Length: 302
Image (cartoon, rainbow, N blue to C red):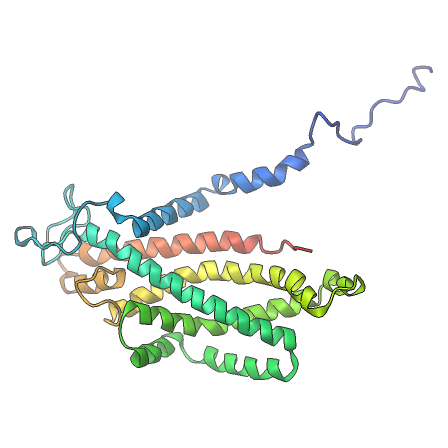
């Protein structure tokens, strides 16, 4: 063989076994380093982790008693001994904010769970059966969506009574319509996909196609929406507690802490501002994480 007849290795040839291609390594590395490459997303994850730790084990952040009163330490400004200052009863505001995390977060999670489960079932039934069932169910959903959510929540709380758990139930019932409409639209969209239609020729029955192909892919968008809805639920729980419909005093709860400090907002601004800032940061962090889930929801499970 002459030099001209010799064929050099093709640069686009198959990768050698001992040298894995970079394309094979990209998806795992991208999954591991996604938050690290996005500082805002990393901060959101860290903040949510701190909030979860405070809800599970508040003693990790403070050793004080949220109900302990001290007449000699009334309305103290934020400082080294009292990070968020003290209220008009001498109670440490930081301790009360930390212990209020569990009640606020628990109510938000229960509310989203109720709306997610009930709404997904309703949307799945409407999208799978279609026809008259779909029309009747969607008209009821349209009526629920037409009424302002706060008015519906207030009406449900008036019937059930005050309390954080009743607030969670009211918010969950109120969010059912949104999840139902989203689940129905995803079921209809995935049900018309090519790979679902092709499964008919593979001999798959309707129920098998529904739970093997349609439900897993349709649930991705619903779960991403549920993640973002936790932030909305935290804000709604705090708003209703601010109105005096949640936990009774002196139980520490985020919305109640903001409401208790509004009397002194002109001079002791920290009583309302600092717990309110915790609420805002938590909602923003949950929204940021939910948006990151929402971007990757187009992946298909065939």
